[in-house]
Length: 172
Image 1 (cartoon, one colour):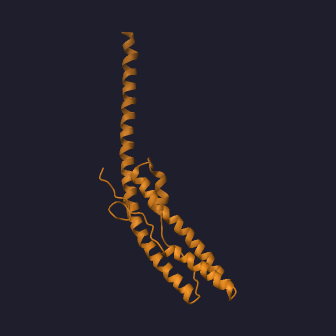
Image 2: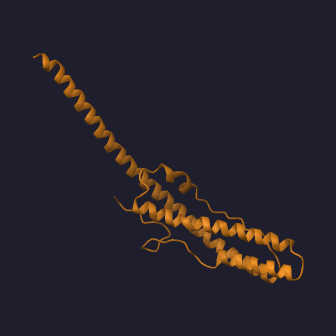
Image 3: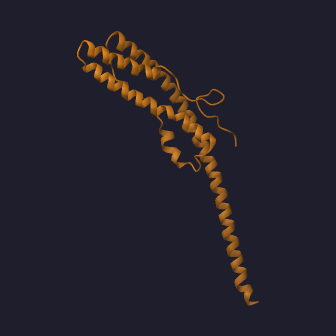
């Protein structure tokens, strides 16, 4: 039984390695599931705050356009919304191809566009403030009002099927 001296330890070594691998995979899958759920819950809170901030920004943009058109006043827009949870935690997820994660990414897409519009409004505001009175000032005012209306004109905030401003988190 010389072969048993080698086969039995080799069998248990292989069995231990396989058991360790399977338990490690199960642990990783459960951890990924927990991380995804925590991410979605945090993003839901962040999106609710972001929705409120964007609605306020739209109101300010409408007032901004009225002030620019009526009084010739052209302040700067300062975006105050945060996407810190989304920006920092998305890369830590194991599977971003999940349908819910993709919906979340889609919900954040308009934020970048709105920030670009705010930059454009601020550039037009500076042009308006430095423009010479007359036609140059009137043209700068038209561009400024048009850009400000782009911020406050429409609410393109993505919504889930239940109308909430965040993806619905499933129980599984």
